[in-house]
Length: 294
Image (cartoon, rainbow, N blue to C red; front, top):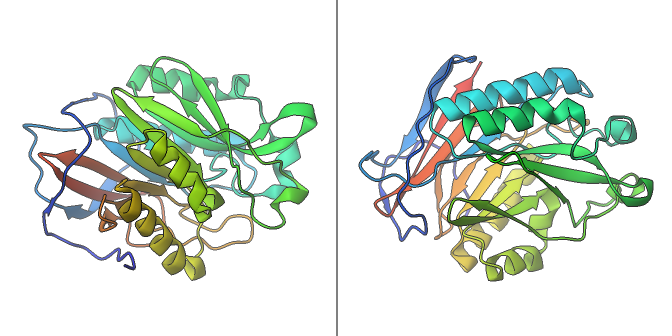
């Protein structure tokens, strides 16, 4: 099927892998949010871990500015009850290969401490995109996950787009994240174009496939069909976080969101721009809502 980001109201009755859990947060709201979509019936009597995709508009090379934006998104996601937050590919710098060597960081770089500290404070596991210093002076397309316990988990894109190998080296390890009793398999963009990647993560016990991506308007129909197919074949919900604006000379389609175990589009952003998508499975039903952040 082709994923459709229009507003939908039907309730999706599915077998959900998540157990019941709740995670309320109290804090100030740094962004004004406007609800744009709600799929399914919200029943707060039983709630699973809430997954969130950050559709973020990165500013080219502006690490300090982008970092502040990430912190604001984290706070807003926590206010809305998120337990896990996924940012797009290279979200902290923008997708800017020509700046990668200049901006690359190690996983424990001091400038990332605010993210680590806030993830702990909010009890919000958060994955961000960053050019990552690898072995022997190499640079990788990194995905750093900051856990609620203060750990930092470094992963790197394994399957590079043509031309990326002129700057970046591929990662070599599959990445799993443990969220309470649940296992998330992490994907960085072109990784999902290789069926063996999702196959390995599914066989490794992943219950959700979390894709941190940059997808253009021209590529969205094809790529969303691929992601929906992965969900359907492996009975594995797919959470996708795309850029919200232009980056690295590419336009972004936005339209971040979630596909369920049947490969059906549950809900998400209707286009580009800053926003958050929150998804949870309640009483066996997946629901998603999207909020535009200004």
